[in-house]
Length: 292
Image (cartoon, helix red, strand yellow):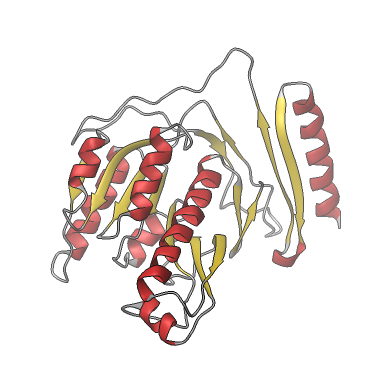
């Protein structure tokens, strides 16, 4: 009760300060189910300041991008063992930098690139990484460096090291697995904790393995869905960010059902990425809190 009272007073104090300094969006939420007293988010605008683009990365080279997160207090504990107030400050004039991973299904990649091109997704995309060559022309059309990193059982560790090197060199804030059909090792998952998002169909665990839409069609499934979540070492079990479904029926072919699934995947992944880069997601244990 005492900690909740302290948190409440802190939120009130911060709210009062922000109220006179250009706050455009603020929200708070209690989260008793996870043992956390509560979470809050505020967004402030500065008159005369417009969003700035970060310097473009040269192919194969490092970028001088500045990080959007300026200060934080995480992974620390009070003397009594309790978790202190955790906070972070982000400069919203700096566009987050996105690294996209893709394999042979390009619908989510296409959707993200289109949103980026029309300005609906406020990010920089310094690189695309794939274990196949299928989309190097698409990357070139968008003037984005394409890194081909084929993966097999013999070179997986080496290729993952190269992947992490690219993430570091390009100062990437978020890695998006846009239908990247490789399982990341526990080491990579740990390195990218809280800043890697995956998308998959929502048949799991019902229809695993190859051709899930054929399996679902054979069973007469009536709903097709998709789930976007943060990547963890527990395959497809990371904190859920967004989910959605669409109806199908007996008259639809396997291909038609798969088409519906692709559309849902694009929309769900786009919303998850948008919320992350706008700093609307707070990780709270194994759950997420979304400030919409």
